[in-house]
Image (cartoon, rainbow, N blue to C red; front, side, top):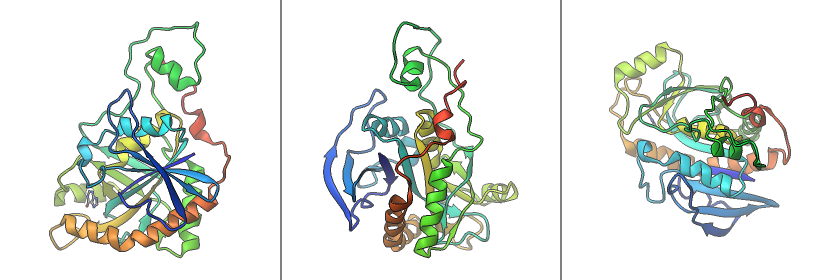
Length: 279
Ligand code: HPA
C-alpha cells in the first residue's frame, strides 16, 4: 500500500475517492493529523498532511516518528513525499520539480531513529519482521543510506513527470536545514559551493525513518523560490504558498501518473536495509 505525505488538500484529486479518515495512535506519540484513506482505481492510497491541517506544526516540531510509524501500522510499505524547496543550483528555477537522488543533513534537533535501545537479546520469540525484533530486543541499528531513495520509486516519478510534460530534474542533492527560519545568504553560498541543489526543512528525518522500517521512499519537491541570496529579494512564506497553489493541479496529475506507473510488486535494496545493520 502507498502513503503520500504532502500538504493538506492534496488528496482532493479527481479520480481519487476518499473512503475514511482514521486517527492512529503510535508508541511515539501523535501523528500530525488523521490519515485519509482513499482509493484510486484498484489501489488504496493513504494521505497525511505533514504539517497537520491548517499548517499547525513547524518543521522542527513535526512528530516524524509518529507519522511514519502510523503509516506502517496502516500497512503502508511505500511512501511518496511531496515537499516545497528553495532552489540553490542556478538551473533549478521556481516551478521546477526535483526527484532528489541524495541528501545532506544540516538539521539539529530531530530524532532520526526508532532504534534507541540497549541490547538485550530475547531469542525465544518469533517476530513478524526484523523491525519488530530489533525494537523488542532493543538493538542498536545503523542503516546504510548510501542511496537513501527507492530506485523504483525514483524511476516511476521520473516517468510520471516526463509523461506529464512537466519541467523537472531527475537528480538533485537536497540539503535539509533545521528551520523554521530561512537560511542566511552565507549559508546558501556555502551550500552552493558544496554542490547542493535544493534546500528544504522536512526530508530529513522523514526518509531516514521510513528506511529504518524498510518502507520504500521516493521524494518529489517543487522549487517554490530561489534560495536566500540567490534571489535578489527577501524571501517570504507568501511566495512559497503561492507557488504551491500554482503548481497544485500539476502535482496532482503527476501523482496520478505515478500511481499508474509504480509496479504493484517489486523488490529492491530498500527491503535489505536491516540485513546486517544491527549490532
Ligand atoms: N529554504 C528552506 N526551505 C524551503 C525554502 C527555502 O528557501 N523554500 C521552501 N522551503
